[in-house]
Length: 309
Image 1 (cartoon, rainbow, N blue to C red):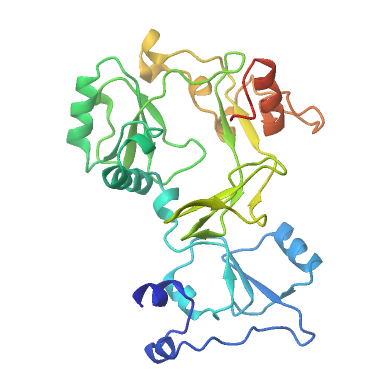
Image 2 (cartoon, helix red, strand yellow; image 1 turned 135 degrees about the vertical axis):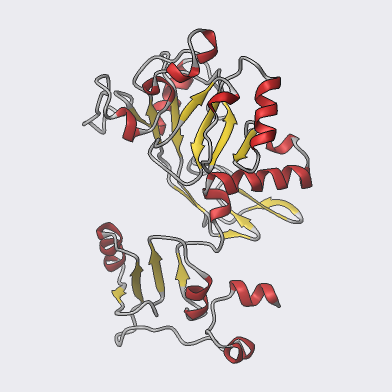
């Protein structure tokens, strides 16, 4: 009952919550659905919605509410039951770095470590400062990376070679650095894949970006074929560093590591004199940004079983 109250949009009052009577959709006089933006709007989204027949609503009491930030409980409780929003409640537990580390630690304790070994050993500072210092002392010679808990675009990131360099009095996540990453022509890269998740309980998300590929969804009772109405953008983005990679432990100090070799953030690398822009979408395997398709072609040429990936 509590879960229904928290996650099913209703009124502010307890009486309305107990009555559980949804309000009718706020359709326009000609029967079309309405939309509203919260915290700012997107011209692309506005054009997309209106091209599909939606009309703007003067209030957030609309059929579709698009928010630029997380949607709080007070907003969810004020929406009509049928309304759709673009954020799940408490999704910050997997999008903010410190909360993600805590969430993975909880899942490791509950389900075993084997399923979550993809996340390197990580600590949340200052709470885990003593444990982090001890781990760094046991693993002498390793490189560690520190990131602010809620920053972006590469701001505030540093490589560490010893606990003496740990940030003092700052909220950050410190992780063991992945020192032997997959390289292309000697350069690090990262991926941006875009998946639309329609439900977390049960989990409904596309498991493949290939057209016609088998899709599955996982629930408490196991795995079953998913319906075809799952969403994943078939393309993605591959972002490269702009200096050739070298392991910080192979010489020199982590503090002296070249940021253009170790970070793949566009906001950082666009300032490099070696950044190569790509102005031709047809030549998607050129420059400092590639498409996902270009990366797959490159991997296939080098003997990687892309279908297995």
